[in-house]
Length: 160
Image 1 (cartoon, one colour):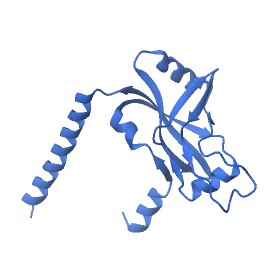
Image 2 (cartoon, helix red, strand yellow):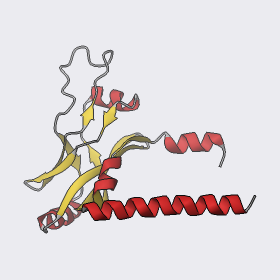
Image 3 (cartoon, one colour):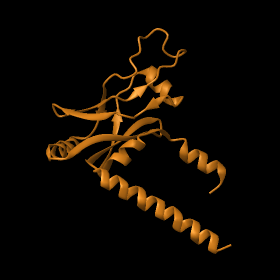
């Protein structure tokens, strides 16, 4: 893969929630649209978004993104009072909302956003139905990751 195609592939991602993958087991993923205002889209184009400590609230048959921080640009939002952590509506199909509602009502499951990204000219949010990890699960994941890294080093060094 050339350098140009790598940068184009990575340019679609706006923000990642790496903490969610560390704290939860991802059971099922969904793609949702987001209802945004103009200044928010301009800020997302500049990459001014964070998903840390954000979550999805399911209420009255609708999904909302809470806690996501989109920093306003000073040049883009001069005439609008911008709230960086406002509640944003997620746009999902009824079938997907039913799956999420059924999953969240089960004990131990919740719904969190994993990523914000561009899909053509639209902003999409990848949300997931997740189950919490215990401390020993987190330690086991770290051990596996370290062991895989070590295996790659051993194979690389033996091929030289």
